[in-house]
Amino acid sequence: MARALAEVLLASGIELAILGPEELCCGREAYSLGEKGLFEWLKERNLEIFSRYRIRKVVTLSPHCYDAFKNLYPPFAEVEHYSVVLARLMKEGRLPLQGFQGGKVVYHDPCHLGRRNAIYDEPRRVLEGICGEILELTDSRQRALCCESGGGRMWLPSPGAPVGPKRILQEAEAMGASTVVTSCPLCVAALEAASSSLEILDLAELVRRVLDQR
Image 1: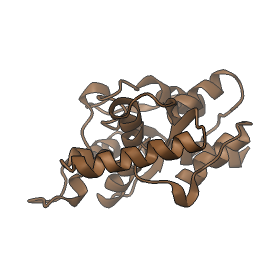
Image 2: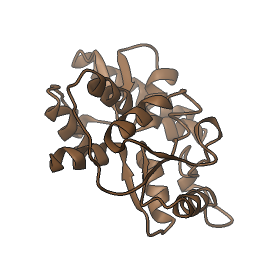
Image 3: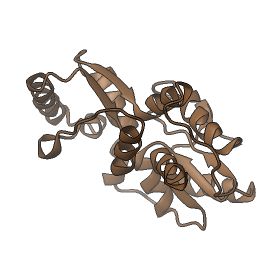
């Protein structure tokens, strides 16, 4: 997913850099699990690194990182989730995309992107620009079902298999979809683990695929 996003941004003419081995976790999951000391340590280290390299803009792949940098860190740079960047690039004509041939597409709203930060329209604009039309789950936007993987839940004992991902995939199949697209690595992992005949893609992966087909 990260490689796909980097390739898409480079193809649109955006110069970018990564921190490589210096990159640390944003600490969002540690914060959610109550490990506030670990979160504070990660936050301090990250702010030191950002300051050292004079970073003024951060584009995140994960909504969890976006939420942490935007709402749990002091202001240090402009922070955007990549779906917002892609929507802007398409509007500016710098990312001309159309003609996805993969059948009907359903979009799943990640919790930390949607409910926590009210980013609903931008991912859909990108998908509509590619597919022309997308299917909507009954529980979408503010009502979207949780993938049950974020907030550190993947490390917590569970009485049974996650319910949300299976419900999402069952409805998508019933609607005749062939692909479920989301914009969060944790959602992708949870949906893939739910086992389905549907293809699960991150939005960046779908955009790269369409670019490759041009």
